[in-house]
Amino acid sequence: MRAAQQGDALCYEQLLHGITPFIRNLTRRYCRNPQLAEDVVQDVLLTVHRIRHTWDPHRPFSPWLAAITARRGIDRIRRDSRIARHEVSDEGMLETFAAPAANNESGALQAAEAIEPLLAALPERQRLALEAVKIRGLSLAQAASESGQSVGALKVNVHRAVKALRALVGTVDKAEKD
Image (cartoon, rainbow, N blue to C red; front, side, top):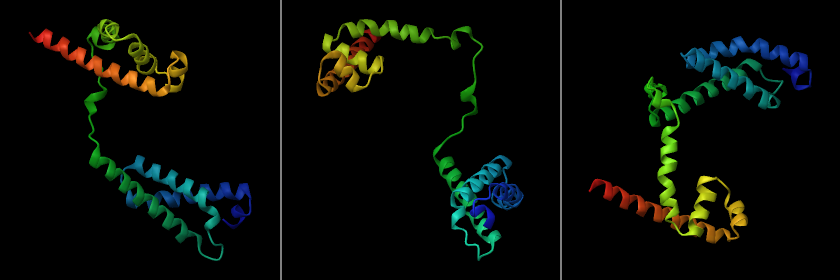
């Protein structure tokens, strides 16, 4: 490590190859999952690379490395437990369906056809603002320069258009129920 700190790239490469089994063995104490353990090993190697200048050559190297490994392992366990508390795994979510209509874009086409009359019912400035920002995905600045409206006016028109569309969709839903 002393040579690596002084810029010897070959010694640094040999050091990284030499410490990897040591890190792997320490990591297995914290992580039983081999894939998770390998992630921690990589995280430790990156940390060593990032903070190698902090090692004091007058102190032993192994305890310094073991402390880094322990911290990275514990950090990973804590992060995974935080994620596990808030996420739900759904293996069935990634399934595809054999029905030919399930994997095509006909639903998107039907939605586009259904929205055309609703957009046509909006006032022109609201419709243009909504199409530019929400449908075409332009930034507010781009849509404002294209439409000749100020950014503030564009925001107001988009807001009013969304509000009007919600009201129109509510009216259509009520008519279909009756």
